[in-house]
Length: 156
Length: 206
Image (cartoon, rainbow over all chains, first blue to last red; front, side):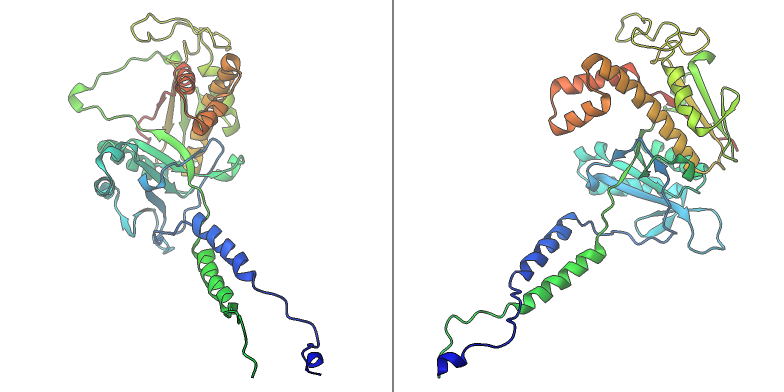
């Protein structure tokens, strides 16, 4: 009789043994493709302009980023410059770049690029000032960060 | 009492752990690829070595943009969409004799397809694009103009590449990235040298 008793009643549970496999696959995908956000923005998130002739920025480890945008406080006018986790003055840009260069190997320094992530409403004057500072210390490779698109009318 | 044989380890919570990690990475991930317009700034010359370079008026493509984002090219008010066409016509004009290269005397541009007007640029290696902006110009406008200038050069390089190697400049760059080789880099350098980017940015207007 016991043979009959063993027979279960109702629907058997769905086999979820492969669920971890699926989830792990997704997990690895995200782990590989992820880049951690390394800085907290103290300024308003720059609304990048659009451009069609863009080049991908290679060798992320050799890129130092300068953010330019409006202050989070509405009452403060003018463009603010942020590097790492602090807001700095234009004349402090060289010291930031030099400190970035000091972290890299000497032979890598000439491949270092400065990426300028500026808001499209920012003033060109601020950007040109930064460029001038970069020229002063011979950090000549610059990339103006943009999003890819063809509708230039949205830029202004 | 029947002994349970080959009892499986309860793996039900494994999914929970994995989900937790998955959600963590989902939240922290930023998928953006950094891309932008690459520019090489001109080196600074020491004060005592400054020489005035004399460039003929006709070899300069003068772009002025004011604080109201209005563009003036060669003293005419134009729209942003016109810049590329005008710049291509200017660079590709080939109306005269180019700069000497490696000691060899300058030659007329034999690959140019422009109007060969004596009033516009002599040769692509003499053609200077000057972008004069105002401090109050918005950055979006500035980038748009830079983008159009870049577009003009790429269009010309693509055309020459298709003519000479049956492969556009963009494609050559892609090929080079996939499989770098000496001959490819030579071709790329040739195209770059044929249409060199000479962009001058004078002091901004106050």
